[in-house]
Amino acid sequence: VGVALFKNVGVALHKRECLLRFLPDIRYGTENYPENVARRLRALNLTAWCAAAIAAFCFASYVALEFLDPRPGLWKAGVVYALAASIWASVPLLHRFGTLWGPLILILTANAYFFAITCLFGTGIGLQMCYLTAGAITAVILGTEHILLSAVLGVLAVLQIVVLQIMVPYSTGLFDSGTLLANFAFTVTVTMATLIAIGVLTLREAERAEANLEEKSRQLEMADRYKSHFLASASHDLRQPLHALNLFGAQLPTEKKPAERKRLVSRIDASVASMNELFEALLDMTKLEAGTCRQIRPSLRSSGCSTASKRHSPHQQKRRASACASSDAARGYAAIRSCLSVSCSIWWATRCATQRAAVSWLVAAAVPRSCASTFAIPAPAFLRISARAYSASSTSWRPLPRIARRASDSALPSLIGLAACSATRCNCSPIPVAVRVSRFWSRWRPNSETQCSYRRRCRLPTSRGASG
Amino acid sequence: MVIDDDVLVLDGMRGILQSWGCRVHTAASGAAALASVADGGEQPDLIISDLRLADGESGIEVIERLREALSSPIPAFVISGDTAPERLREASTGGYHLLQKPVSPMTLRTTLNRLLKSRETRAPSPHASEG
Image (tube, rainbow over all chains, first blue to last red; front, side, top):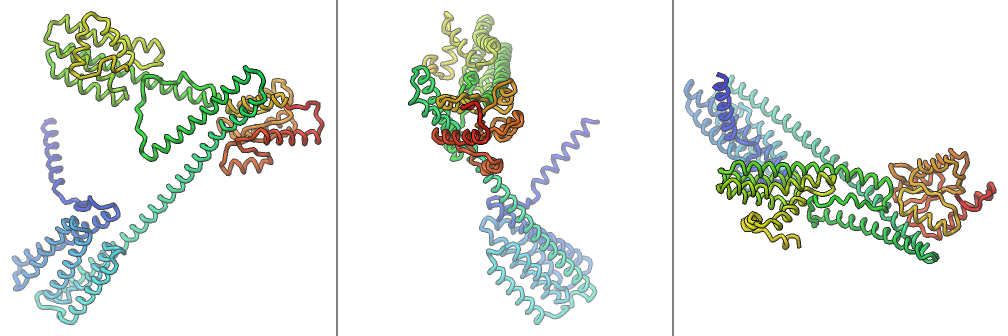
């Protein structure tokens, strides 16, 4: 029962998801515009769909009324509502032709709709008030950059109101006075609600713009502060070796002892090297900012931590040492994990000897990709090891001793590398060591068929070429 | 007494001051300077400190602590590679003479002589050199 219920719920959710996919999205047609324009167009979409929904509701009401209480001429109003609803619903489709087409069609259709309905029912319906709402919506949607167009549309609306007031009677007789009054109350309420909503939206927009401006200025201030701080730090760090250089340089001419002169020269060299290092770092920063710097993946070959320069102060050395220790530990951990996973994969590959395709997929694709990306292991090392495993698995139909020999040919160097690195406290990476051990292993084996096989398959360079 | 967190600068200062005939004690931090004084070392004639030491330590604070520990207004000046206005303001409000890195040996010697002379005029010292 539980499974059936679960399935039913799943199907229901899936159906709901499928249904939601076909519902209109407020972002429709605005995706290709910048955010400030798209926001306005989204507001336009919302307005158009709300108007279309109201017109569709009115159309449905008039269709129902036509059946319940048929009156001559009522169908015309139904046609107007249906036309208006369909045009407003398709306003988002016009965004692809430009930002002005949607608002213009919406406003012009609204004007025609107000005019037609007022002419049909009389000014007593109060629809001419909606011109005011339309004017406010026009100004909000078109914005200040199209203020002239808004003004023209406003004048057009005023003219229409005047014409309607002069030409159209209070009631054309299609509705009695009670229905007219009810319609008038409804129109006034909707108009007022729309005007308030527009006011609130405008205020919210202004507040948002203000908040954005404040945030931008705060970010700029922070960036300025960071820049000043950076310049001060860079200046301090550059002056430090320059100052030392001055002092050593001043001592050199007066120094008579050769040993002391040699020491001074070495200190001058150290100061110059320190300055070079700082300038290189500054240059690298500039390159990074300019986007011309190539990303260098962290190498596992050498951590370089053991060569902490003696020219740094004790606190700098301490800081570097702690950073290097944590980095060494992380790299060592990642390398051990990677090595273990590779060994396990090789073991699995040899066990599943009959499933050659699965093995080749796992070893050739999954292992290098996952491990290399997760642990930032140099890809060639993984390629070599996985290719080795691949070649072992590809000959899996052959007799077992040979497979075992191939597997040992692949897995043993990795394990030796792992053990060697563990013994040397992870100062070097297990993978390159494994590769080196495997090279040595293959070179000194009487029949290095596996090596040739994986080279041939993966078109890897020869060991001499690779090491060169 | 020279206090600076940069090994190269300390080495350079020691070398040049010794070449001028001074006895020099160097310290990489305020704690090291206080320890060298507390170990029964002789009272320095002059303190030269970097303005910004390691771990956010201020050279001016270290000078104040040394003066307090030795109960003597030992002449001192600060050297700084900082160009941040608040740092410079800090030195000037403390009444310390500030030399901007890189300091030329001539400027260093002039400042040194001036401060030592002012010390001698206030209270004649048995040591002619700093230590």
